[in-house]
Every structure is written in C-alpha cells, then in structure tokens.
Length: 292
Length: 334
Image (tube, rainbow over all chains, first blue to last red; front, side, top):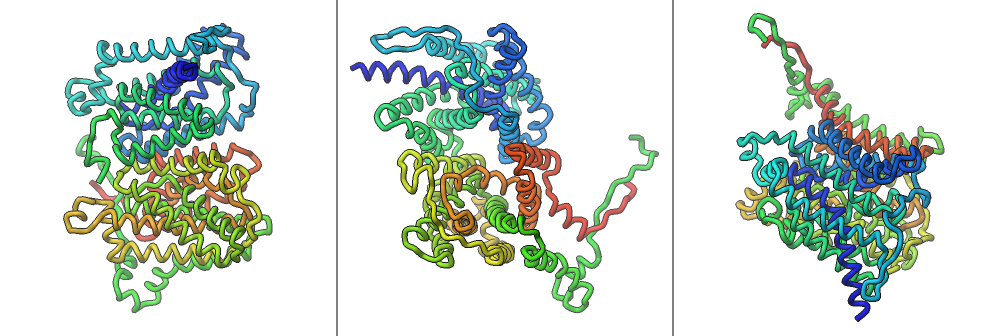
C-alpha cells in the first residue's frame, strides 16, 4: 500500500516536471512548426544566468529568476529573428540549425569551465512534509503547484487572449490566419520568445532540485521530444497527457526495474510512437504527410 | 528602379568545352578528355599519395578522415538520393564496431576477416532494425534515427552487456591507410555509378515522388530497404575499421560525433554531389583534430561553421566549385 502511494505522489511530481520541460518545445512547434532543438540549451543557459545574477552580482533570488527568464525570452526571440527565420519551412535545415545552436551553447558553457558540482540554486522553501507517510520535500510541492497552475494559465492564455488566439490560429491554418491579419513571422517570434521563457521557467523551478550541469541540457531535450512526440507534435493538451503517461511509466520502471531503465523508457516511447502513430496518441492524424 | 537607368544582371552560361565533352565525342580530342579526367585524377592521386606526404603525427588522421568520409557518403546517399534523412550515423558505426570487436576478441578472427563479416552482418542488423521506420517521412524519420544510437547506449548501460560501460577491449590493431582509402574511392565511384543506373533512378524517384513509384507497381519499402542496406554497409565498414584502429569498441562508438560531423561535412561540401561531402570531411576532420587542444571549443566551432553554412550558404563548396568549373558568368543588360 505504501509503495502505491509513493508511486502516486512521485509519479505526479515527475509528470508535472516532464510537462514543464516539454511545454516550451510544444508551444514553439505548435505555432511556428520549428522543432526547436536548442530547447535544452535554453533551459541550461537560463539556470546559468539566474546563478550569475544571484551569486556574482548579488541580486535578490526571486528578482534574479524573473530577470533571467526575461533575458532568456529575449535570447529566444533573437535566435528566431536572426537565424531560424531564414531556414523556415525547410524541416531538416531547421532541425540541424537549431541543434547546432544548442550544441554551440552547451559545449561553449562546458568549455567555459561550467561543470561539476559547484553550480546550484537554492530551493524556494526548505523542509520536508509527510503525505500519508511518504516524505516529500516542500520544493517539490511548489513545483507541483506551479506546474499545475502553469498548465491552467496556458489554457486560459491560448483560449481567451488576443495573442494566444492568434498563436492557435497560426497553428491551425497559417493561410487563413494570414488573411485575418495575423503576421505569421512576428507571431513565430512571439512564440519562440514564449517557448524560451517557458524553458526558463521550467529551469528556475526544477534546477534547485539538483546541480546545473551541461548534460541536463541534453536530457531535457530528449525528454521534451519524448513527451511532445507521444502526445502528438503541436498538441499542447496531448503533451500534458503524454507527460502523465511517461512520468508514471518512468517512475514505475524505476521502482520495479532500476534507475538505468528510466531513460530507456523515454527513448522507446519515442521510437514506438513514431513507428505506430507518427502524429502521436492525441495529435491530429495527417496520414499521407508522415507515412507512406 | 526607373526604366531609363541601366540595369544589369549576371548570366551564367555553360562553357563550350563542357558542352563538347558531354557525349561520346569527348574522346576525339585530348583537351576535352583532360577536362573530364582532371578533377577525378586530382581526387584519386591526391588521396593515394596522402599517406606518403603527411607527417607522422597526422598519419592516424588520414584514417579518421576516411572513416568520416565514408559516413558522410552514406548520409548524403540516403538523404539526397533516397530521401531518408538519417541522423543516426552513430548507430551504423556502433553496430559495425561492436560486431568487429566480438568477431575479433571472442571468435579470434583476423582483422581482414572480421571487418568484412562485421560490415555485412552489421548492415544486415541495422537494416532489420530500421525496417519498421521506413514508411516514415522527413522529420519523423530523422528523429527516430537520432534516437536509435541513444537507445542502444542506454540499453547496453542498463543491461551491462557487451562489456558494459568499459566497452570491449583487446581488439587487434589494424591500421592500413590504403585499405580504407581504396574502400572509400570504391564506394565513392560505385555510388556515383549506382545513382545513374536503373536502381538509382528508382531510388531518386522514391525521393521525389514516392506515390508515382507506387503507382508504377513498385514496392517503395523494398527499394528503401536496399538503399538503407547500402548506406549501412558504408557506415558499418567505417565502424568496424574504427574498432580496429582504436583497438576498442565501446559506448562512445554510438557518440553523437558520428552523427553530427557527417551532416556538417555534407552541408559544407555540397549536398547531393557525393564528392562534395567527402571534400567536406577532408576539411572538417583535420580541423577537428587540429582544435583538439581546445577541448569542447572545437564542437562549438564546428557547430557555428555548420550553422553559418546552412543558414547563409546552403549550396556548399562543391556545388560552387562545379559551377565555376563548368560555367562562366557575364553581365548582361536587363
């Protein structure tokens, strides 16, 4: 019984974590159709900027988080405006270009001596509470609440605000959106900025749970891709549901098979989903575009 | 832009000698023959004398260059002649490398046997494993193939098989530059020949319009399988030879380097020309080796080069060079 409750609690926390990592990727792909393979790099660089504000320049912790999220949004917008916009529409070039950006950022950080155990962010709230006899530290509770709130906020944002509706319009039918006076290039820049800010927010929430290391960037990218593909590329609610699915699957394998198999599950999920249903479990099927 | 001001544009025309040397008549004059033979002769003799002229330290690099060139050739063939963008070059290298290591250390076969057997067996396994992904198109196929080497790394790590994280040590050393150079040349000219044969025409049709191929009563999957087999033969050969050069096969055979560098080389060299990517590998790999002292900065540098080429100069060096060789430009009035 105990183990069931533990699986339930840690499974939901892990699922929210995955959803946080993936939402930025899903947002950018859903609106501008750019698979942003620099997502993991943006995630890590946000942690690094927050750390610099906090430790080097002695800014207040919460302020430094807000500032770093702003900066990362700006970086995302600049990357799109000056580089990715030139290869827009050429799917493979987009992947290669954005992956090259991510690679350059991550390996540049590694070269700049940014590795090891020395880079950590403090948790928001110290301490541990017991839920039905299972110890959970308070920061994870904060992550759970913030993540759930963010998912709700995104739903409201995309259904009731002008920008949100414009983004959804772009995702559904770019030509129709253009005819209604939605500037697709500007919207794509906005989407990229938002996506980067979501990556930054995820970093600010999740990085205090561990060290800021470069490898995390690659792992976040893989997990984000896994969630988005299983949920259906471009479908946000699909991404949330897929995060629940993969989150619980990973926790279950961790409990019953061992930690090593955790990432095997994510990769297997990607491959199996792509082979069987390329548009994901919850995405709109576009049969001829993806399979022959 | 008013109509009175003189506007000019650049016009490109084929050189006379190119037109004259197109058909069988090129055999009638030495000038035309030389025009045709020169680029090929430069390539072949250049590659054959390469191991003789480079200094000792760079001897090993000759082998690396050829290994990467084979991988690049495989990527270019699959991506631009069959339409399967495979980001998983590392998967081929890893499979070939592990097979060579198993054949050599467990069964005790000499390198001259273990390399060919590992190549064929590895290519067979790779094709079999990629078979379910073949119906996928574009981005989806690219992402799947990107995930394969990662998956295999994690599986080997988790199950602790094939030497686990330490890899398989004690593979016999076999570093013979001419072996790999001749293999590279054979594959380069073989593939160039192949893409203009009947089979190659069907493969290119699969890339351009697979529904038309299907409508002609040909199985797309069958032709894609053949293409993937050819591509993975090159990848596995590179991997098997690499295992014998390093005397080791391990998890880093599945490293991202083997997937990224060939793509970078193809983009820089000129996609779809087959020779261009090889040229790209001959530029990038020595650069990579030269920058080794800078640690991971070299990855930053080649990521930036790749980015610059793909965003600003996506035609590549070889296409540019061929244009200069075959055509001349002049300014004409509009």
